[in-house]
Length: 271
Image 1: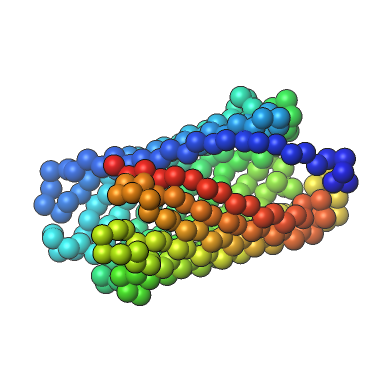
Image 2: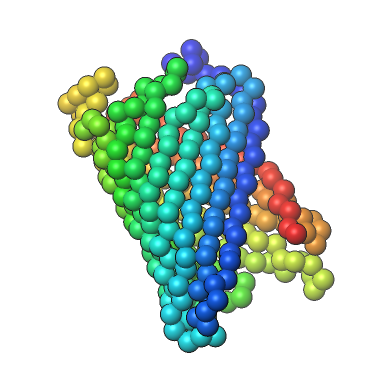
């Protein structure tokens, strides 16, 4: 009952990301790429939700095609990540991936990612998750089309398969997302206002029913996510980002159903 479990709280978070590129000595423009990121979040009352996570991937990118205008690139890479909840180790994963990028024309670009991860979950004081440990495979495809210099549309499709130590934690994931971005001029001397809208659906199919919940019903979730975001330039290097988002989840198990509205305001600095 919401009256018994509802709780208001305040939180703050810090998200960092970066990429370092080192050019190799080749006419093709081959290079080494290092990508990294972290996310940290703290709650005022709900300490069990505190998050610390870090991710890293590294690998070479090889270019094919004309030297000054390559149309295809290929990147094999290694990856690693860790996520802690309330100061305790929750998930560690290592793996490898492949990215194939194709520039079909000046206005059409495509990416395909294939990733393998070996995931190691740990039990914490508030969660039992070790039986989720196992291998995971993900395939993701993205296609971006520049309608004109002020309008961009993109589509993303995802498939994932997770193995685990117990059958009721094994699942298949299917997803599709469509995004549209529009730039609006605010004057000849200022950067444009950036508006983005995205809508996506995701389906999760578990192999078996969880004996602790309903052994006769395998969990199936249908998730809908939608968001609207505005990037408003304040100065030459500062943007105000306003975002509202909606999530709706239908499930074969009622205790996993929910819907959420959310909003955020943030500042982006450019150097």
